[in-house]
Length: 97
Image 1 (tube, helix red, strand yellow):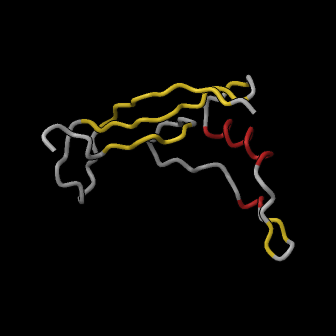
Image 2 (tube, rainbow, N blue to C red):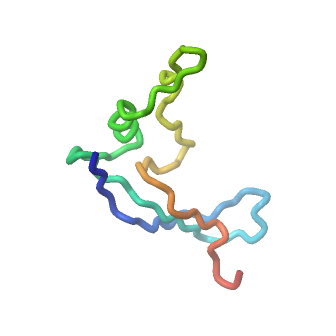
Image 3 (cartoon, rainbow, N blue to C red):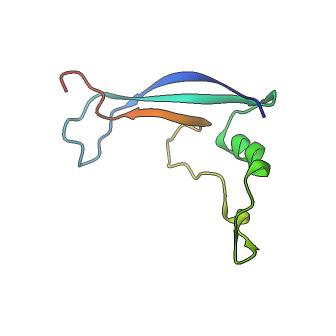
C-alpha cells in the first residue's frame, strides 16, 4: 500500500472554550493530509476509511468478529473534513507564551 500526502499548517479561528485562559484570534493545526492511497484520490475521511477498512486486522473476542464496530469518524459541526494524520495541534502555540 502506498500512501501519499502533503504536510499542511492550517490556520483556524482561536478556541473560545471557557477553560482556554488566553484566547487568541487564531490557532494552528499541523497535519499530514493524505491525498492518495495506491494512486486513488482521497478527499474526505470517508474516502480514507473505505480504502483502509479492508486492511484492518480481524478483531475477535471469544471467536466473534467486532470489525463491524469500526466506523468512519463523525465530525463536529463546522469541522473541516481533512483525511489526515495529526502531527500537532497547537492551541497554545502562541506569541509571548
